[in-house]
Image (cartoon, rainbow, N blue to C red; front, side, top):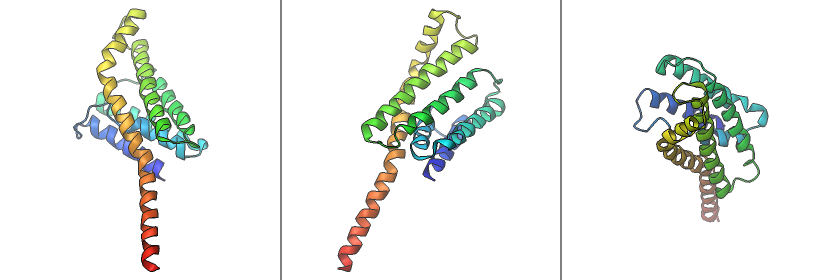
Length: 181
């Protein structure tokens, strides 16, 4: 259930950012963390749910907010969504903090590589050669820091909150049994 809530939060934040209703940059979102958590806590047969939800939000944002046409770079982004859900599945049996942090960092790096390659390949912003590809990556470096920060922060929050709630329940239960005795 929590995986669906995190997914809804991620979609809502994307819209709020696009509409200028949040003070963060466009790439400071919980999308990567929500995908990782969904993959770690949901059945693999349901991985289409976050991919479809985020793909639909991409289409809506591009069509009605940004005014961008539908282009092939969206398909690469959607494939990336599926890949991150699958990566989250690797955390299903072992979601220790270091593994979650590593997965969050891998989420940031892969998004940087995939999305900027897609911009270079699809749009006419850079020359279609190795120098142009390098140019697209260099131009995106200032945004990468925010992506890493948001993926790490939201992954810690999303994976840590259930642990914190469980610890609080155990603490309350232990306190109640001590007072009853």
